[in-house]
Length: 106
Ligand code: HEC
Image 1 (cartoon, rainbow, N blue to C red):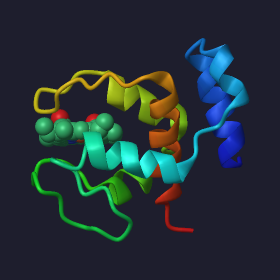
Image 2 (cartoon, rainbow, N blue to C red):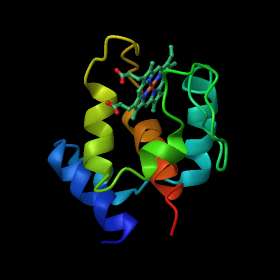
Image 3 (tube, helix red, strand yellow):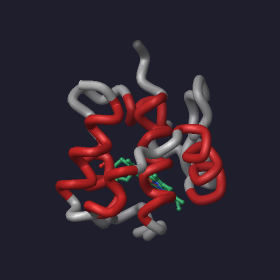
């Protein structure tokens, strides 16, 4: 499946039909990640250890077998004991998800 399709499917799954026309842009997602996630997670491509050792580097998360935009959205929106629930505007969420998935090894 290509990324655009995955993002589209995720949009439908979340009932965010209005967002479906716009797939996330990885470049903008990197800025969202730097602003919201980098205090704990390694967010850069090739960065293998996180500032907070409990937080998986995004390159690791992206390469979990079967990881999709839907799964990623779900992981981010479910609460963890150790990770705060961060609610982003939908547009930023799409950029962020697109960015994380762009970190997959090909
Ligand atoms: C205050 C520190 C902190 C911040 C900020 C933070 N996280 Fe996390 N995150 C964690 C920790 C700790 C874990 C491991 C939690 C666990 O396994 O219960 C985690 C786990 C995750 C996971 C994997 C969950 C799983 O179950 O495998 C994802 C995906 C994730 N974070 C995404 C994000 C994104 C995206 C952001 C920015 C919007 C973010 N996190 C911001 C601390 C943080």
